[in-house]
Amino acid sequence: REQYQVAVGDANSTLRSFMQACPARWVNSWAAYRFHQEKPLQLRKAKELGLLIPKTLITNSPKEVIKFCSGGERIIFKPVYGGTHTQFIKPEHLDQERLSYALSYSPVTLQEYIPGTNIRSYVIGNVVYSAEIYSTEVDFRSDVQADLRIIELPDVVQKQCLAVTQGFGMKWTAIDWRLKPTGEYVFLEANFSPMFLHFERQTGFFITNQLVNLLM
Image 1 (cartoon, rainbow, N blue to C red):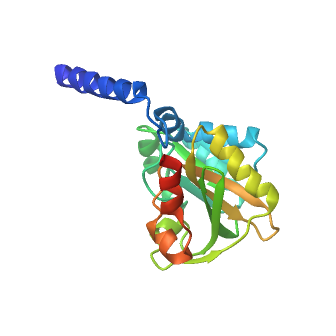
Image 2 (cartoon, helix red, strand yellow):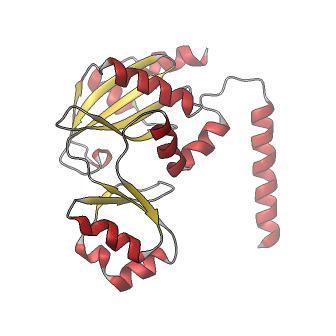
C-alpha cells in the first residue's frame, strides 16, 4: 500500500512537472487549479478585491455550527473543498450526535442564504457573458429546468469579473453571484473549469469560439 502511494505520487509529480515546464499556453494553469481547490482562500481574495461575500463559517466545531445557525437566518452548507451541491441546513442536521460524528471526519462551510436570483458570468480573456438564472433550487446546477435570461452587468460588476479572473490567476472562468433585491451582487465562487454547453445553447453566446481564440 505504501509503495503504491509513493508510485502514484511520483507519477503525478512527474506528469505535472513536465506539463508545467512545457512552453504551452495553459487555460488554466496548474497554479490556478490549485488555488481553485482552496475555497476559503477564494473568498478571502474576493473580499480583498472589494467584492461582497456571504457571512461564512468554516469549522469542525459542533458548538460553533449551532451558534452560527441560531440567529434566525436561513443557512446553507457545502463542502470546504467542493464536489457536491449546496443544501439548506435542516433541524436534523443539527442533531448533536449526527453533527459530532460528521464533523469528526471533516470541517464544513456554512453561509448565510442570500435572497435573490443567481447570476452566472463567463469570463474568457477580456470578454464577459452573463445571464440571470431562474431556479427554484437552492443550487441551480441541480435544476435541469432552470431558465436563463441574458443580462448586461453594471460596469462595476463587469470590472469585478475581470479582476477576479486575473486575481485568481485564471484566463477563463465562470463566476457565480447572487443578485439581491437591493441590486447588490454577492460573490459566491469562481469555477476553474466550468461546464458551458447548456449555457451556450440557451443564450447563444459564442463561448466555444472565444475559448478557441483564447487558445490560439
